[in-house]
Image (cartoon, rainbow, N blue to C red; front, side, top):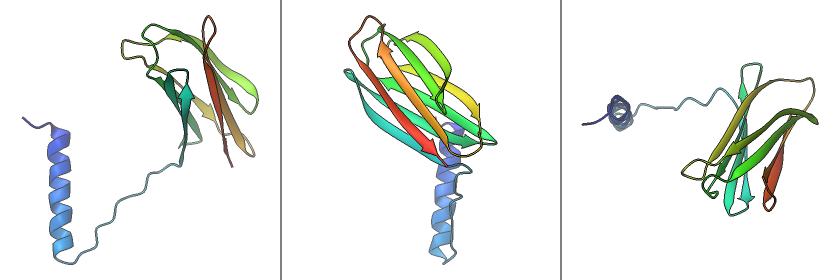
Length: 132
């Protein structure tokens, strides 16, 4: 049984193919926001740090993947140098830690930074994203 999403995707693909076959141009809509991502190593795992424009602000997300199950991590998020979120989370059964927050757009450039540190020492990682 196919899900509704699968059927809609298949219908859209079939329709686009039909229209392209008769010489009509089919364009995909661009996303309404600009995304910036950074990836890197974090201990034995990896991080994905992203900042997405959302309305009058930004959705800031840190995903840590491939960590030891139940390992504890302190994650800090900074916006223009000020700490805006500090939390300690345990990696889930898949070894993942996810942190998200929303920040209003500040005047001038917006600089976001994160730092993740394994509780008890050892691994740490971090990255910075600046949007103008």
